[in-house]
Image (spheres, rainbow, N blue to C red):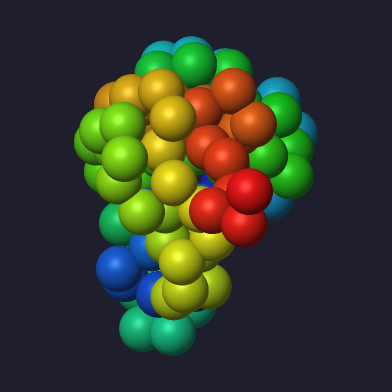
Length: 93
């Protein structure tokens, strides 16, 4: 079962595509561009449609989704943690 999806292997976040992801769940992530899967453990609950950090993210790091820069990290996150507006912001303003 695929739980989260990312487009490019360099993406630092993936999107939850199923409901009910709870902390402690072992997840399967599908990397679309490579048509392969990797595993990650959810460290927090991840709502459907929200992002999960696929790699450790430090303040100031660039966030990649779809293979492109979508913003910057404003609060550190461990791989497997919820990644959303509380720890990622756009670089536009």
